[in-house]
Length: 177
Ligand SMILES: [Ca+2]
Image (cartoon, helix red, strand yellow):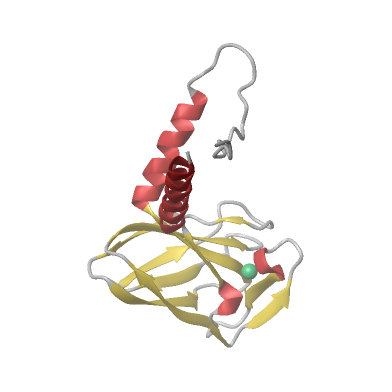
């Protein structure tokens, strides 16, 4: 019985490691090397801080290790209107121009697709396209993870008839011997 418990603990650990690997990378913009921009406190923001791009020369620089593959890149950000809403984001050699999906609230931006061909350190550069943008964090989500998520969502939506489905039915390993 002890052996079984050990095995199930190992399995739990393996699952934890795998799901951790699949997690989207979230980079607080305030944690990057900022120039010509101000880090500001913001209660509703992740990490309690945002970076305001009020200077056309504003930028944020960093780097990240990525496995080869396809990634969806987007911001959590806010902007006042369509004339003050755009930032350039460069991941590796690919550059995109992103802006929020809605105005005057902290929300997701449009996304762009990045392909990483070689394993290694990948430079990240965020540059001002229009002033007035407030950046909370940058999210880099692997396409494989996105696919897994949407499949999970589909599976959750399937049982339509009957009572409410229990949402967090996490199965914990039983300590019974
Ligand atoms: Ca933040």
